[in-house]
Image (cartoon, rainbow, N blue to C red; front, side):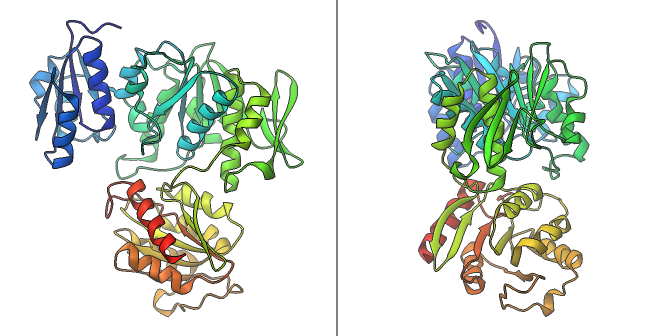
Length: 469
């Protein structure tokens, strides 16, 4: 696609906005970028763009955007932001940054979405393809410095054969031509209710993965997941499932990860040899293995890649082991489903650190898994009081009568509320954790009440945990 003679407006000066602006100007576009912020970090990013790109900080020129040939919005811009409302009022459509980037891709495309496990699965698919000798590159919503924005992949001088993109609901909301050769949905559960009016509207954006499905499309779904099945509805293409036994294309039997491909059974690796902590990561491994196989990876390469996989930062990451207490950083768990999955993955009593920016989910949903796995819940941050209150009701525990004693024979967890910084939360955890326990930062909330990002929160916890050790 040639942008010569075209005006391109980019909203947001984050990583994806910068990448889109660079791609647009490289392809010959006349580029205008705007951001409502004026802080030093944003101003510094302005200098990264250099000459040839017009940048406005502290506001947006709606008239200029309306007159543009393309408007590209960063995923961090909420749908009710004045700039997007202004565009909608003037019947001006905007697209997401990956939608813009995919118009320049020359290789095949894998699009991965879902509520949890997207990043791990995306990077693991890329790893397995590379282990099989297939030229691949990963990016998209991955963030955290682990992979580039989609537009940066579109600028590669030597394009790979496969591009593997993690797609958030915010990015899928702005697609028009996005058409993955292989589409993956890891799972679905309520999330981002601080940004969406309902679960249904959140799922509706996820469903846009299927907008341009064709008979040649390949889809990878969790077996027996009714929500995902409804999401796909009658989308064209072939469907493959993972999990839930031998009826799937990727499953575990007799302690071994297996694929069923073109009617043949292909053993991969013993479950015990998967070097990733947690049962949910074994599911991610099955998902990635099936996806890589559909993309042409050989079973031997997939097996080798699974054996050499490593945990990602902030995703059930073991960061310290002291006095037989494991300290685990799961800061990426920003919703109830992710925290529940983390708890179900651990085989020792847990001291759970729960809280952060309130996203509107019901913490009482955690009661069953908390009763089974948790000895102490420590609530903190903006959402901490509500989390402890709702858990106390669901568990039938009076918070003001809770003991601080950690007894492995007690089946009703202790509930604590810490009004302070993460240092105070870790000190509280240290005081109640005993030998054989795990201290788990799995907040079920975003980080923005106290931190810039879940990575920022996770790094701080890791430093504190290592100091303890």
